[in-house]
Amino acid sequence: MMPHMTLKVGCQIRPQATTVNAMRDAWRQADAMGADSIWVWDHFYPLYGEPDAEHFEGWTLLSAMAAETSNAMLGTMVTGNSYRNPELLADMARTLDHLSNGRMYLAVGAGWFERDYEEYGYEFGTVGSRLRQLEADLPRMRSRLGKLNPPPVGPMPLLIGGSGRKVTLRLVAQYADAWNCFGPPENVAELSTILDDWCESVGRDPGEIERTVCIGEDDVEDVGRYVDVGVSHLIVMIGHPFDLKPLENLITQRDNLR
Image (cartoon, rainbow, N blue to C red):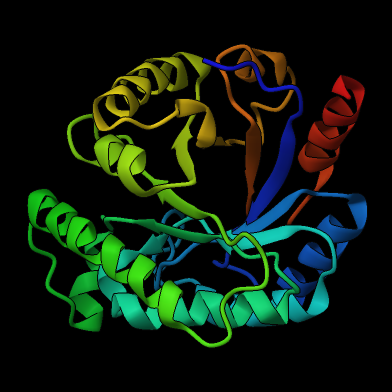
């Protein structure tokens, strides 16, 4: 694996058990601090804690985030592929790329949170059926991005999130500019090796794929453990009341590496 000379760091602002104003304060502050990326998630209900706590929709939040930040890349970590038509999703991301002056990721995954599907009327299906839909939808997104007028203004990397060894990582090798999984470093190292094998199988340079990893607020002390296994972008997941000290810690370590 090619060594990464620089590390990017960011945060996910979780849109549950909070207010829109609290999130707006958090993403403005994160952008001003020098975060490389700011993310929300794409769910319709809380993923932990009180199941019926306050919750907000991710892509709508990204519209405000695009207008109210200036520096960080933005995205959903990650979009539930089944929730939107793939052509529409590509158009939404392209439009937000213009609103943000070229700072969007188009980040997708196969989806997994059953309550989202059941309460919003989507067919949950099986892991296999959701992965088959993702495989069918990825070329549709790419095709639509090539037809939109005007096209995205930035690079708008296509990120795929997931750890599935047989299908998800193959799709990353075939289609993605970036890939996300979760810590600890041992997990990342194992999955990265499998991704490298898939890249070889499909004739892809594994160095072309940005490797992003989501970590908890308690896992920010030693970024070297992640850099050593080829991670190029670390994202700390933060819930309300949005204490950004873990992000500040990551930014300090990033700057010390440069």
